[in-house]
Amino acid sequence: MNQLLLGAIGMASLVAGLLFARFWRRTGDRFFLFFAASFWLEGINRFAIGYYGSAAEDRPTFYVIRIVAFSLIVLAIVHKNRSKGAPPAK
Image (tube, helix red, strand yellow):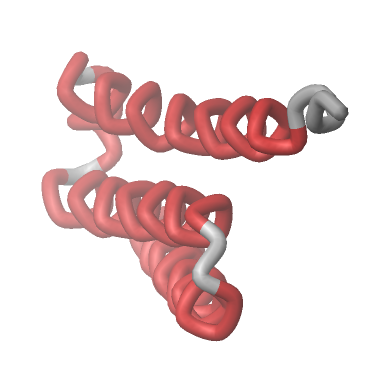
């Protein structure tokens, strides 16, 4: 049952990444590209955890992948907020 749920979460993450990639292609905004990459990493991570078994979830490798995925989300938000910046000088 656990592997079934991990597969479903992994599939949903990959689909969410595809949706963000479509938004990126439509708008050209890197915000969506970072989110797509983050969801793809998380989806691959879930499939890997399901493949190696739930006991493998305690391995540091899986935590590093999660940190990278969540860091991409934070980086996207920070980059989006900084790109607006101060109003142009007159």
